Length: 271
Image (cartoon, rainbow, N blue to C red; front, side, top):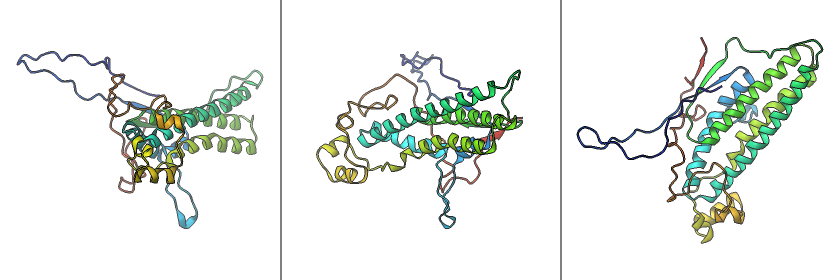
């Protein structure tokens, strides 16, 4: 799924002096990830959908928009925003739940495909899969992409079962709807967060920003406010150094942003 070129050494070392005596500083780290998508169900969840109030059509958050929102959460959490920490924990819990849901349904479909006697059924595949290049700035954006890839494989399995006569139309349509529902729910998780540049001290001292945050997003659990409970992939808090991994890569442009180009160049066809 991914062509992910990782740096050989992410540790910090003393720079070797150049011939002129000046230290040589390494440049910013980056990586490259490419995801192959074969179904329209997954492809639509990359870009999402704009709302159309006149037609009563709600918006659907896509992967690009989700990545931008997780980047905002990530930055705010590192700046001691306890609500961003709280939402990152929700994102992490929802990610785990959706992963379990997709895996459970995939196991069910795999057993169905294996039930045909004397048959070796290969999964359907696209003759022209889309290749999506990803450059995200947080682990949560990549985890969303991994779930989208899992969804893509699940939809292929469901379509295969329908095509070879192991699944009726009603069951097929129900499984298609079930397949994407969890990912859509995950991508929408962050929408309740409001970025107010609030800090834990603001909440503890009941400043104007702290009170506003409570009004909009509710009372914080004690373990979140104290910082005792944080998401597994949360960034280090401001003033706490972390040298465990590479610097975050720059975030991709969000095609759903009104200021973004209408056509996104990051989705190309395989030759």
